[in-house]
Image (cartoon, rainbow, N blue to C red):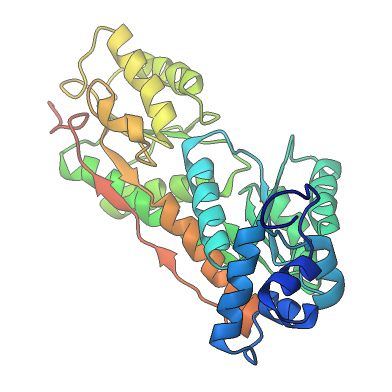
Length: 338
């Protein structure tokens, strides 16, 4: 494509070289960020690329440099608040570092589905992976990748921390449970996430550990599936027991369902039953009543994943560290009435 737009074909590296007055090898060195190029030459080449709207041929660059500068994301759920927020942050951080991102969504966690998704990403010549699929069987499947490409997982602290960046789920659950205990509640029940999810396990462990430290019995754990519907059903069953004064739900959506069950039973939240969630999704502050919950910084989680992965890719360094959760107290919790 020429500057005056008379040629409609895509600009080539030789078109850029011609306009910048340099060789095509010099343009290639600029594209590969060679330190041997003078600043004024680099600026001239970049200006020519902008004027011609030149886009490097990624496949050709892979052949020449053996680098795709592509990161893969494997996710089992990109529709909910947490995973979608982390994916946005990962894409932004990767672009800022000169990497592109390709995503594969798992339709299920069956072994063949996991293998197919991983094969799809590896076929794109990804240099590293971020895994947002915190189910135990996915973790087992990706462990075989250690010798093929670097990978980082977003998952519960304590599960293969050599490859993970995480919010401390156990600590977050303890914060939620301690808050209810500090308010005088002793008949506290937990609605957990699906059993195969490491996040659900971490939150349940934190709940049980905090109760044990206070010498308070836990009662039966109700298993949900992260949805408001499952929280509603669990809430109905818990309220039917009688005497329950507080519920810690494994995420905000299930807490919403519990609030529905409380209201439907003719009870008041927090006067009769206090409710705590987990995640601090944007809508949580608009629940009726506004939801007390545990905040996870999903954006920071995504950024740290990229920092850790690029550390391995660029300089061989690893960056660790769990992100501390934060208790956000709103009006869905109050002192126990009895």
